[in-house]
Image 1 (cartoon, rainbow, N blue to C red):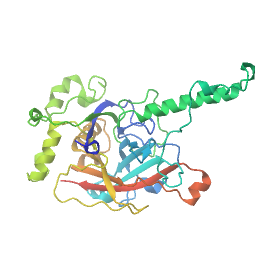
Image 2: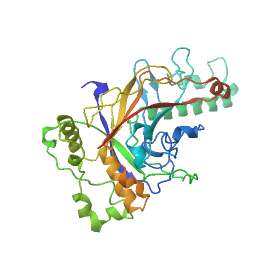
Image 3: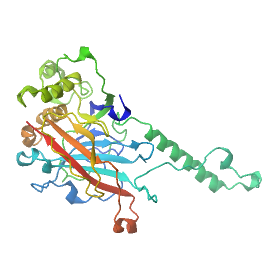
Image 4: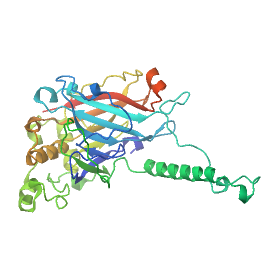
Length: 356
């Protein structure tokens, strides 16, 4: 299997202690409040095109890119959706925002590379022309701080595509006007194929049952009932060949919430698939990057029901939500942004929805 064809699955981890707790843009999670980096987001970009209401954050995915010609470390994709019945089945009721840090290279403005400055112990000190008494302590302090910063950046770059845990310090958002879905964190697992897994019985386990006894639907007294519930995929679509393949891949990993394969192929639930539009910024075609899967919706609906969340989630239904992003990963800044010295770029990408 080629590297670009590998599929990483976001599997459910622990529930957030509070649905409005904040993390950072390096965190991958389901629901909650968006963790924007240091930028002022245009409010129009987080509103539904159909009803005009504020969209819910469905998924926040930290998604750095690294290849021979492109490296972007600070890159996060936010998937927002409107669960209202009149909007949910249309791609217009969804928005995907790619937020990344911009480096103003002469030709590749979307390239982000660590500084290549040598930070060996030798050049923290004078080059040899100064005595020990002439050491610039201020310069030394700055060099050590820079070395520490680069070391931390390197660590982030080598982390798996999905964050595995929530933040240690959990401040809460003060924006009460932002609607939120139940929030939980995820960890990544590479999809592998084994024949013995093809006939696995679909069941809904974990989501840190023992860690969150306060949630009614996962209390120990109801645990047997919880495990007995299943996804009713067969009622969603006709049992054609495309759908059966879709169902089989879910059965192999029945808790998968997101499938991630940058530049790969989506797992479609129906043969007719809407084509993504070309990038509105640079005109390049868009590649598949990720898709939301039915278990994600199942977990959200179950949690919302037991937390007495707004009833509009009960009627929210879709089979998969597919996200396509610019193949050139463009990051063009406007003249206003350049004047303001803004280094973050927000690009809206293409969303295709397949529903029952």
